[in-house]
Amino acid sequence: MTIRDAIEADLPAIVRIYNATVPTRMVTAELEPTTVEARLSWFREHSPEQYPFWVAESGDRVIGWLDFKKFLPRCAYRGTAEISVYVDEEFRRRGVGQRLLEHAIARAPSLGITALIGLIFGHNEPSLKLFERFGFERWAFLPGVAQLDGMERDLIVMGRHCPARSTAGAKSLVQSQTNKRVSDSLSLMHTLMQYRHESIHSQLLKIRDKYSMLHLDVLILIYHFAKIGSGDILEIGAFVGGATIAAAFGVRDSGRNKKLITIEPGGSVKHKRLGTRNILRDLERNLARQRVTEMVTIIKGRSFDAATIRAVHDTLGPDKIGLLILDADAAKRRDIECYRDKFSDDCWMVIDDYYGTDSNEKITPSRTDVDALVAAGSLEPLGFYGWSTWVGRWRRRDAGDQLV
Image (cartoon, rainbow, N blue to C red; front, side, top):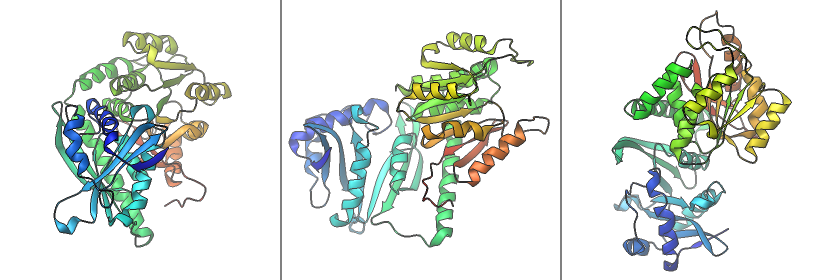
């Protein structure tokens, strides 16, 4: 892959890549596809010396592009530029966007640019993660400013200085991380409120009543993470399928091909509402009733058995896990250790049995395991939902990283 200045002959490929994102309602505020003719004057406004336009090329094919543009017209903002990154849908998750963004950050000072801005929808989690990976922070949150198919969507302003400004010691770093965590937690709460006005809310309410011991809010978040996440999904402890179905609905509505793997050893459970003599039989029946059987790979066995771990790895192949749903026994850390090598950076984590009464023998060891991983910097907590469910993200740590 090479990165070079774009020329007018690249414009058909640039427009094709752009138009492919319009129907997703994830990337651009445009509601209808554009044309080469309509974009010609926009393209000619760029200049290689101040506001360049680059394409990423593989062989003879343009597979992505990045452009700079004025943030605001006033002279005092001349050192700040807005950037946009678009990648051919056939070449996503191959590092194209990373290379373009890295190139932009490196070249910014030589262009006289001291700050970069990216405008990203709040539900575009992959793009937010990409920018955060390169040191961008959430500089502004504009709730409900976009109307996409009758739905209000938030806009997040991501920004960073070029070169990056050093913080005043560990205290500033901790404060920055705390502020971001609070912002992310509030964003999840806002997401839940939005879903209460959508049809999926009533669908998942029925699923909760029929097939799940989890709270409705937890099922909604599972649906949300499965819908927006870029990785595959692993569930440990399917029971009779409530969370599995919520995740399957999310994958379905994402429009993307994601693997959904669920581990269930089977057995029977006495329960006044969801009692079953044969968990696996009822799980398969419930998935069939909701027409999601073909979307789910059921692995029958205990999560920590070597055969089960091998089956999960074989099913995933080179893919990473973007969402872990953990609702089995009390050994949370054991299960996380079994599959941590397959977690993506910022993998969503939904872990049940974190809080409850002393009569529940799973609570204390579960909470101990989760708190230990949080203290080690491997888990980032983003809230507690329903009756006892911990929600957060996985934080991959390299050997040389400092845990703050």
